[in-house]
Amino acid sequence: MSVSMMPNWSNIRGLVRSVRPSPDIAGFSEVELSVENVSPVQGFANLLADAQGASLVVLVPTEVAQALGIVSSDVIEACVRRAGLRRAYVHREEISVQHRR
Image (tube, rainbow, N blue to C red; front, side, top):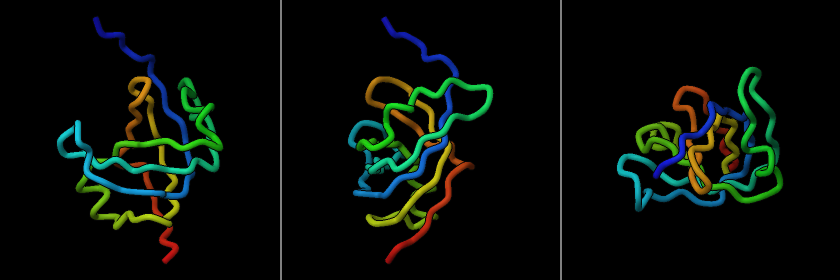
């Protein structure tokens, strides 16, 4: 039995710790973040409030991750939704990257 999640979005800012192809979901990369800040998106539940100060893996479409050139030490700001206990997805049009190379 699957349980559907309530509509939710959160704005997050975090330091990229690693980027790798998702071993479970084709076409996505797993971006591990040290989450610096989480803020709510008006009109939606903020199911990632507890991620502030923690490590979080977010799924980013691989073509988006490659186009943005996301690598370790970058900082990303993105709109993210929780899709289960261990899954969070980035909104493909609401992500920006600051490169700190």
